[in-house]
Image (cartoon, rainbow, N blue to C red):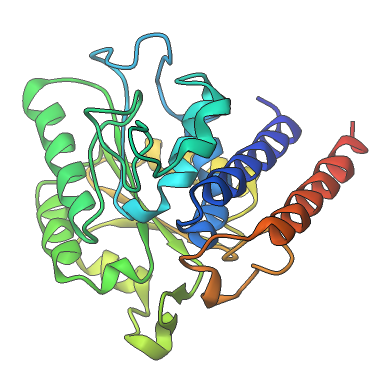
Length: 280
């Protein structure tokens, strides 16, 4: 896909996020919106996947370690063709296959169930090690929140990945600088994030604008070309990206917009689409 096509798709993913959380009357829009661009690049440009064959053996794997950002994963999967976009408003509803956290038994395209913070990266490390031991060429990607990396298990997994030189593993940190209780550097600072991953023998890529699809694509290219080390990509993003009243607001970490707010959010995203379409 072209840069513009990816930008337009990321905007569609954001529409799906807002629609899903509004339909659920619960959920986590802020961090889902900050991750929409990297999720779009992963599923529409980077990963070897096939929505018609979600379990194909040689597919690349993705683990959403910050599982509360399920709306971003679901909207991306729906727009990629794994299931109908029309099902997104059933998020968290009784009987829906779109649970509050990803469930690999229920949702097409989900490679690993997740939700408890810190655990997803361990699962991803296990997948990457399995590929190495079995001689498979597929890659594993995992997305962590910057608040999530306050969990000790993250660094145990990183130590293991670095020691075993898992160069088929790509760890992505969504560094929007906000968690449920406020700014991460005020709650329990994990900075400098890059130096910590480097200490565990990771190749580290800092992305100045983690909502820029070209910068994200360049980072993934560099990660694929890195041998002998796992890669950590640290994306500097904006929480609530492109929804005016959600941007950089910790209060929108985990609550749903009401009907009036939903209308404003969708109008914001419509304006983004119109501005992008003018570039055609």
